[in-house]
Image 1 (cartoon, rainbow, N blue to C red):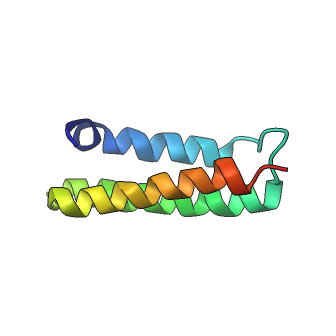
Image 2: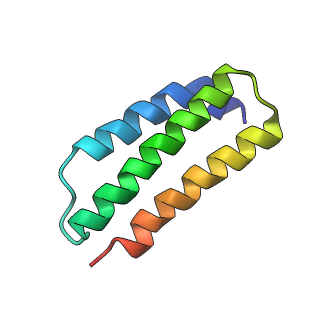
Length: 79
């Protein structure tokens, strides 16, 4: 979890950048935008947990949720 603890802020920045970018061809625009919004929110939650020094178990659960949301985009948002 060391990389997560060191770069959780970057995770939020990248998620926000992805949310602001145009939805790539081959993805459902409305569905993708909605899931990206959830991803940004979850990445912020992860970052806050890191900053508050939450336990490794809490961080693992939080980043796993973000990972699952990412997979929603990769699997469910494709046309």
